[in-house]
Image 1 (cartoon, rainbow over the protein chains, first blue to last red):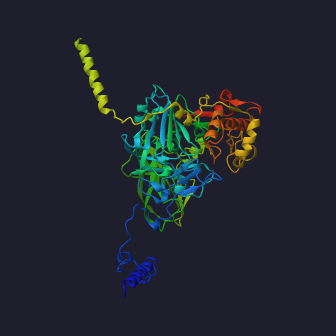
Image 2 (tube, helix red, strand yellow):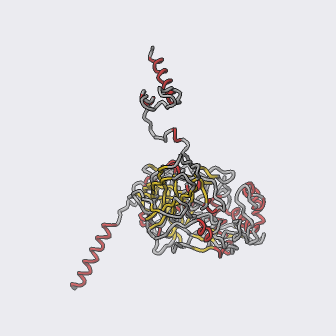
Image 3 (cartoon, chains in turn green, orange):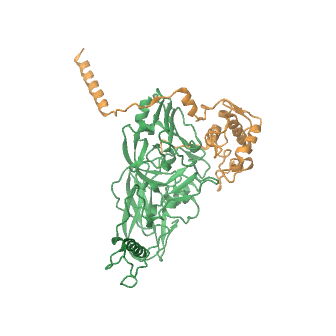
Length: 413
Length: 178
């Protein structure tokens, strides 16, 4: 047999193995079961490559695109598949995205950041210049103000954990403390607000209180160790830990120090929270304490009674998670779920709890508490207080029903 | 110099020393921005009218601009479909199905100018002239019954327009509810 034929035969056997067609000596077993040697050990694997991608078998783990505005492709949101993830960090490629007029294609060499308004020295920075500034790294969640908004609906929508709560993600963000650049520009004493504006086609803009800008605000350049993804603000975004996501203006091009809020579209007609009495809450910045069980969750089916591990995430824009309680009997009893370390302020916190399912129908819920003492409310009193039309800032408890069949569903309970 | 002055001087020196030790040194790589550069980029308009350009427009003129540039997405007379409804809904906010439009919800007329100029039309943002933006803003305010069809909107008149829902916003920050 010549070399080419031998190579072809090898590839054919490998393909048969991969497709499960190769018969095993044990009837009904797959090829990789012992005592057979699995096919991927019988020839060298794939070559090195320059940028890794998820395993092809994980191709179904994707963001869920929830409608863009009619006639547009980039004015909407894509949600992180929380039910398929574990740990506290969201992979950059699955981090939720929310854009108001698409993702701009920005050449970093041509991008500029202007700082002006009530400053002694109006300044223009290149991205190269920003890269020379002292940087810090912080692990923080980012959450869209509209996350979990489906819980405002009168009936529970048939949606997965990611589809309801996947407008939250968590990354290690690295960048320049905003304070350093504001000090160089020389902010006038007592100047109270900053208008932040993006370089997208909506020139998306928000007014930021100076106290936050001088506290923990960052000009983020890196996400999870690499430069920002385009959909998350490449080449530079504002990052305001704990506050509603749209204020962390992406593709940041302009900061104007101003005497009063500009009252932009996205702080008046949007991202204000309409209450049942017709009044609206405005400037509701921090995202409230919240948690959700990601496994098991809607769309999954438990395979028989026995031991499972409940896993979920908790977070608070006001501080650090101190406690997550879980009920596996529809709220009759609650137990503390151990928190995975590190537990960081304004970061996703993983909780896990062993649970022995007796095979009966039940309801699972989690509720988080933060270090300000705030505790996540049940949905019913939350809706009684805020009504069904606020759209934003819903932190009500999420319930999943487990049927005797093992089927897990989104319920209000 | 008394001993007391010396002591205070020493304390001051220590304080300066500490500040220098904790302050982060930065490379000062920003270049000065010129007035022309700043005015070219500064498109934000505050509720007090700061940032509004010269120019003007009326609802009568705005109707034509709207039909050409806005109607395809927002329907005849701002009725909505396929995209956001811009007109009507006043009195609906406390009901079961609130309709949020410029007329029923937006607290400031200046926001209409600011947003239309920076972001609309969706496929051609920042393509309208300032006169066209004033005119479309006037048209949308007129359709909502807030100004007359011949009322001229300009840098002086627009900030004085009182929006119907202006007093129904409760500022929450920084003293957050718990």
